[in-house]
Image (cartoon, rainbow, N blue to C red):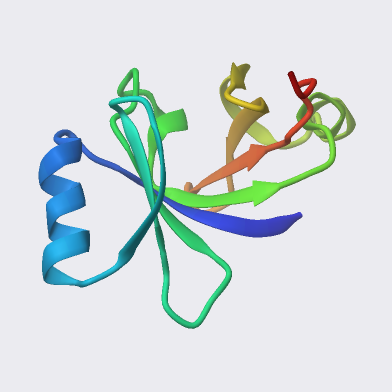
Length: 116
């Protein structure tokens, strides 16, 4: 697992982008449609991902987004983990979320989708 993003759910992407860009002076690194934007965090390879989540379940809570080779394999190999929601397709691959023993949300993703 490699920490890649800090995931921050937001209600208003435009307002959140304006705050991180204009007030904190972070550089926007990419966008995915009208619901997701990412910013480079100075001095690190980790990015801040802002997202208007499609739901309000525990799988959409703020937390780290960790890259794994294969989300479905990781889920299958760890039945003891408190998984929240179902694994789902995302741009470029798959994602899943679980809670750690303290109830914090941990997100996983892979880049398993075929390149087109």
